[in-house]
Image (cartoon, rainbow, N blue to C red):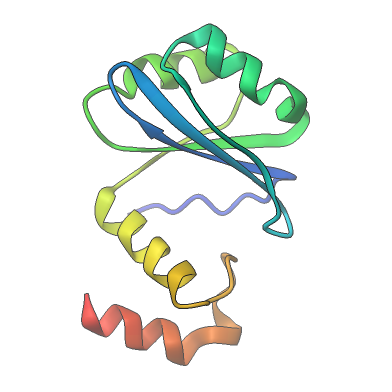
Length: 119
């Protein structure tokens, strides 16, 4: 399995549904820049991410409605990451338990190993 490891100024996670999407954009320090529920349309998405377009990556769970967003991000030159629900649940568990939101797990190796052993 390949993991996305590039660093960006902003990270956009989207809970995407057929008619709506919930966007959350964080900066590098984990500060919430945007929390918004909006219609699942290209115009609404582009309006929401416009202030962060200089260096944002978009991540979406792999489900049946992600194709249009992947195509739009490709067309707009916005990095797009498709995530598997199992790994997204793992990431949420780390955040919920207070593990640092970082691709470098060395500071929290024992806790991360404990979490993974429970999955």
